[in-house]
Image: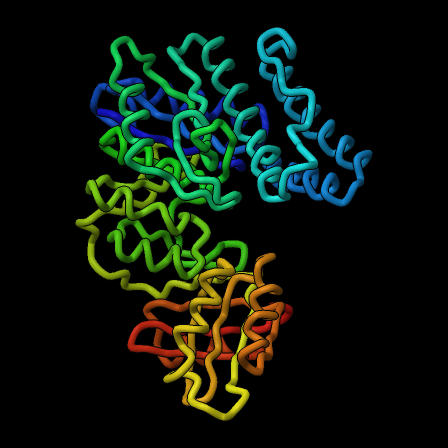
Length: 425
């Protein structure tokens, strides 16, 4: 039985979290474990950067791009010091057991996005090095894999596209070789080009990495370990009375993740569905808990209302300059611009003379708006959120609207989608 486990930043944010990873790994390797009754044929463990390391490394790149070298170095030293402190708490010797990279991997002659990938990817490199060495010191059979040399991608910086054919061959060859250690520690979120440059797969891309690896090694299951009991019908930070959803079909999970559910990365499901590999979402502080199971044979449609918030939206409305019919004549042009500027569309609404789209408010939006203005009259509202309610009723919709400024709404038989002002939700 080959399995893939993925631990996010919250589960490895400190020494206690890493000790908990060891506990869960040992349970997985033990045939008497509460997780499984089968002997393990190997465990692929995918690790994210520790805690808020990715955010801190993003600031390093931003400082350097702005010519603020002193601030960048100070932020970099803070990151290194944080990792060194965790190593010491785990009983590891910095500079002896592990030598962390001292210099910032930044080249001022390269584009910002390429430098972003070289710097930010160091978070996963450092976290996995520390955890691999710690598990080895604790007597486990462990091997560290350098994913930029194994998961082959193109050079679309910050959202690299994976070459599945090449990557699958490389990964499978490493996994199937004789005398492979029982546990493989691999980085999530990052890959590499054929000429050796590191790439990233998009924020929260570690889930996607775990799904790809599960597909490549024909895993029996993939488990994502989170700081929640499983997949809930709402964000517990927003809704006080949440309910665990114990079983979902792949299609339900795709809809939830695309709508903005934070538990699963949107690209995670397809590699698993292709090979009918079940995905479990479990609490890392209670490994024996059932959590949630996503598979082809889920228990049917979710029978409770599900509330999903997608934050940081911008609503862009386009009108024809000459009072023509936007929908009939310009739809392909609009979506070509949206595609070329890499906007992530959350909602579309159209009439005879206007088209409105709610998109993630990313760094690509300003340039897209400027190009759209060349062809259309464009207006927009930012500081918005998209609330998707699945399994809705008219009463639920009215309750959700109460006290909020609604910029746009759509309602179908079972789903309501409301674009609302962020400051009021």
